[in-house]
Image (tube, rainbow over all chains, first blue to last red; front, top):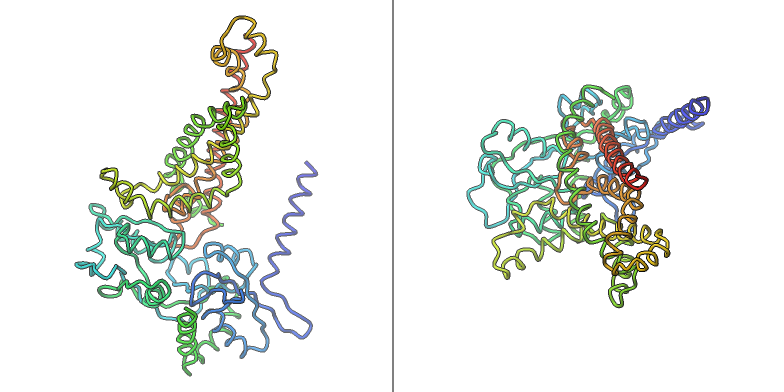
Length: 264
Length: 231
């Protein structure tokens, strides 16, 4: 019994040590902030030819960091679904991965107040598809999206409202190559993406997928913090506000997209 | 950690227990059907068959199940339709339940793993048993059916149970080919709230429950055989 208690204590001590990792302060008073992101969502976050983290998320936070002498940002990479768990346990202090917000999420996390990217989500089909312009046209058809993302949520809620003729949701967790070949071969009928995602996929993979109809939703993306990090959020949001006003965000965003398109 | 989210993730995950168990059980059955003859062929050194199986088993054992799954998916997505067309069958990859792809990959793994289990169990039967059987005038196949196999099967149960549990856990890889199992159902149910930690804990609890029950069932089988043996 004693051994078990000792083991538990050791484990919780380790946990505490890890908890402290998201934020550390050096002698000069500069706080190191660990930012969590992933490496598989170009042009937002990906690895460049040298295997280093690149993309809009990092570019933007680097620009923020340059104006905040009291902080030093470092980056750590996680799988998308594990990012927020890393935030929970304190391994990272900021999660940056094109997060959209909703009331359920705000219950648990602190979202930035400055949206740093606007996205519009569209139904995406192959070029010769006709008669698809809205979600209703996809009833009974196979639509593939990544699990646990906003679009999955959108489709699930459509199906809840239309139980008689639901959309067949097929979750894919493999590569964009497989998604695109499935769409091309008619294995699936449609997917949902942002305009930038479609543009990127068409350029990278040589496909000619098109967006149809009105955007299903427009979302702004935000950084995510733990509930007790209001000060960090305020410091970052003030800089973001300035960068937004002077057009820096716009410029970085276009540059990020272009640099991905160019390498192809 | 929020218990109400944990509870709804548990419910979402529990809804997929049946498909998950089927995805493990069917490949296990196929694995037994293929693995036992394969083990016999290798143990009794049937020429050509033994060498072929040796290479195959070592190949399959050396490839991660995950990779096999992806390979099966990509291969079938590219050639399933043309094969079906040339056979004149009305099936298409579009309508193919993706669980079948996951099942096929797991069955291949199960066959290789179980053939190793049976081979070990065969080796545990002493030579004297064969001699005694032949001395009683049994033919080779009679000796196999009446003397050797009834001793092989109970010995292979504990390891077989391990393989079954490995298969249940591998079912979670099915999400790569759009198959929704316990874990992915739980994770998907938390998309709105980003409570992934709760989802993972819920899935872990369910898997643990399934595996405990599986272990108990195998133990029951073991007791059953043990009683018959001493009776």
